[in-house]
Amino acid sequence: MTDKPSFSDNHKELAAIAKALSHPARIYIMEKLLNSNFCSGISCCTSGEMINDIPIARSTLSQHLKELKLAGLIQGEFELPTIKYCVNTENWEKAKELFNNFLK
Image 1 (cartoon, rainbow, N blue to C red):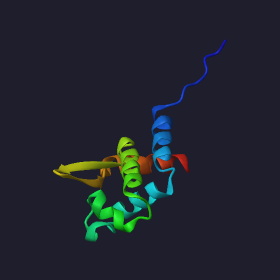
Image 2: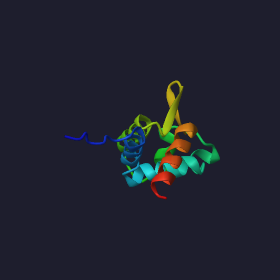
Image 3: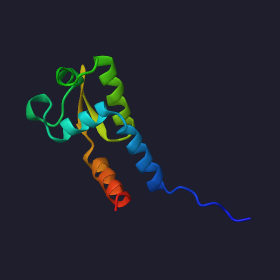
Image 4: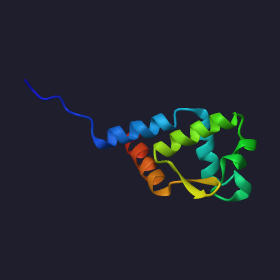
């Protein structure tokens, strides 16, 4: 009996990133944060600043931000009483590398 191959860490990581990006709102959020189109041209902003530029409810936005954060694509910087969200550039570069290798 032969051992079945297992999924590599890259397979698992790419799947988690793809899952996090599997909703149009999350792609929109990432696109806006990456292009600094939220929050008056700065790359970090609060959900309160984002809510006026995205066609979803505040609670839904919070859930999408949570999913992106769990996947490591964004990070939150606490400036009480708010959280400013920014792209996690190190993880975003890794995600691009994984997708590029996959799409070769």
